[in-house]
Length: 116
Image 1 (spheres, rainbow, N blue to C red):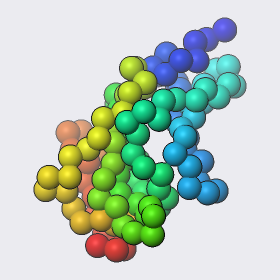
Image 2 (cartoon, rainbow, N blue to C red; image 1 turned 30 degrees about the horizontal axis):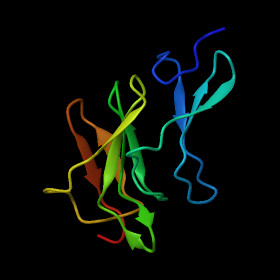
Image 3 (cartoon, rainbow, N blue to C red; image 1 turned 90 degrees about the vertical axis):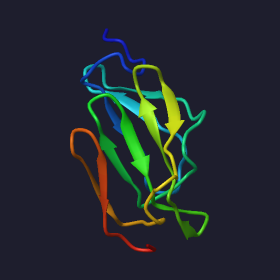
Image 4 (cartoon, helix red, strand yellow; image 1 turned 180 degrees about the vertical axis):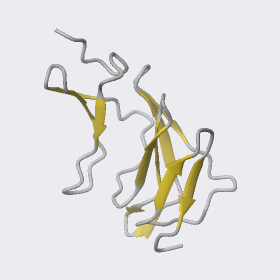
């Protein structure tokens, strides 16, 4: 049986439930068809309509709506260590949701959205 701990396989994929505002994250291993909870210690606040991008080693979650307002906060999740690190708000774009984001290979680029 393949390992199911965070960072165990490059085939693991990540999913955040969006039917309601959840803060919990789940890791899905398609090889074993199992779900494993990941840590929420240090994770960004619960949000929806945010973006998430993959850097080849971390997932960056940024922006979205939470507590009735546009957010300009986020976090970086490392599946290798099952840890979250907050993104800096210094120089960050204004809070927004329904925006898009891409990974350039070295930077997360955020474009558009509402609430900005």
